[in-house]
Length: 341
Image 1: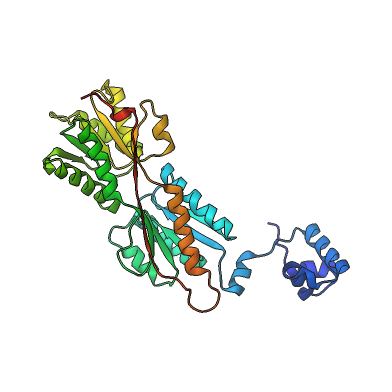
Image 2: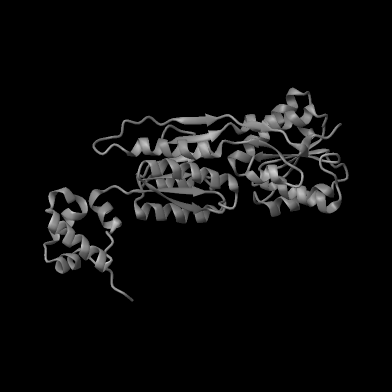
């Protein structure tokens, strides 16, 4: 195994002191042109790379921001990461992206890794409904911002979308199209987003004079296409099958759409479908999918900006007040819900 080249090796090759090499790297204007050129030649020849971790240890400040999401297989979280990365890059920081896979134990391991690496801060979409992982991480004193989740206290910032309003948008649209029996493919019940979207759906039914019995919930263990296909199979097996389905995200909706297509059930004529997130694949589906749009890129960028604001002050406590930013969803209507009832 090749040994790494250190600053002492560069100094020896250039015939200068370690301090001179350090000045060339960090304060080149303080070094004579000829000496600077000789040191730079040695750096290039030896392939020396500055140890960022050592620099950060001396400075006490990391240039890395952690991002822990529920599922990087979901394009929604890819867009969140894009927004966060853009804001971090503009501030000269990098982003370490990790995927909890909706597993609280995986989440705990990654939060422990972030603490070990002493990252600048963390953007977190929680997988643990109990909040224990967050409480454990909070003890490390590393700032974090909740993403796609409203902060319940005043100890951290959050950026989210009004999921109650989003659920109401989806079901109100289906009610306006004439549907009176609606299924909700909901995902894991422990997730706040799933519960809030259900609350919004029930609110829309109540507004229309319909009781909670008009919403048939089909929970799933995951928020992916395979879970949607499974929910679609269960939906097909119902004796009194609803005429419309609202899904907690677009991946579930695409899975339901696949199950309907395989069974010869027409969408939207036999079953109307509405998803949530408005990922890129929603518009490109065989039957373009009606969806509740979340501004994912904006969400990621705003969360990163809040974290940067909290951590950017070098001396003394940051001049920062924790804020809860709640963005508004938007219904994007496409063919999957436009049956002529």
